[in-house]
Image: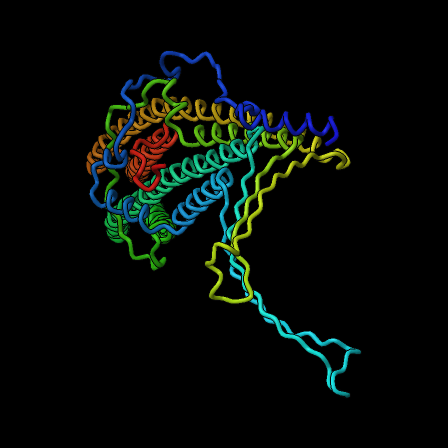
Length: 472
């Protein structure tokens, strides 16, 4: 054997025996100066936990969320993708173990010897049978860590799919709650609009009666009729959003969108506590951050795979079995055959494809780092925004509540002064309009506050424990 090739062979064998390998990528660090508390608003330092939608105190809503988590087809598809990732991880892990296969061969052959006649016109022929049984094995020595890096990448793909399933569950819960809130607001607004129509119908009848008796001007009657027509239009304004919210919610639940859900008549009240936890806890709680981190590690692992492709591949093969012209002799040890072999493959010329692939994987890993940082910053921004909106919306609701209370008091005074002839009828109509307007805005702001609380829980990473099917 040529001395150069002999030394290369011995070096490869030595690496196998010593277990030398390229180092696998380590878990990357992400350093950021995190504050001790959230910058926007005050919140509890207790981390969110459990099923956060149950804090709204509505049994019907809790049942709808559970139904959506069980039956939503998009969520089921995400769960199937997690199973696919687990299977790919299993396949990648199998590459590190030797393969063993068995084969059983049988053949029957007839040959004609042309040009060798016997007895004049006869052709000499022969028949033969051959049977063989073989066990063969192959194993690639993971000298440079290529297979291990590929297994790590597949494992991180599974972790990413698991994080995506958690994110999908949390997003679905949030969508279900928001659709239910929209439906409830539409029903409550519809109730307010219908009650306002009933009041204005009475007002219009009174104006018509006063006009008929000659004690009320035609202007009062026309203004009452205008307000009544506008109120009736407002009733129709909320019927379409209610029907749309019904069907949207039914689709999320995996039901046929028949528009049969009713919801509850009044929006629930918010709990005062905001369990936002500490900013540092967000890095290990939000599934999109965990998924981005897993993708980063997978990208580094695939870079290690690409680098290992530049080095030789060393594999061992072995086979053994029997071969006989009679089937019953296949188990005869005297007919045993076997072989052992090694294979060493070194890429020499491939037009720079392998090195270009290394550069490509390094660029993809650099992109994964950038995406991870962007995901982290976006996550903190979402929490801070939701916390800031919490205070702003609470103040707006308080001011609208006060305005509605004072408008109701003003309506009572206007009606009293009108009956004594001290105020025109138009003042009563204007005050009625303001009462209805403030009441409607108050309901809308309460729904916005509830939706913002949903956004806050989603930004914090949900809050319910990972289900059993997500366990590794």
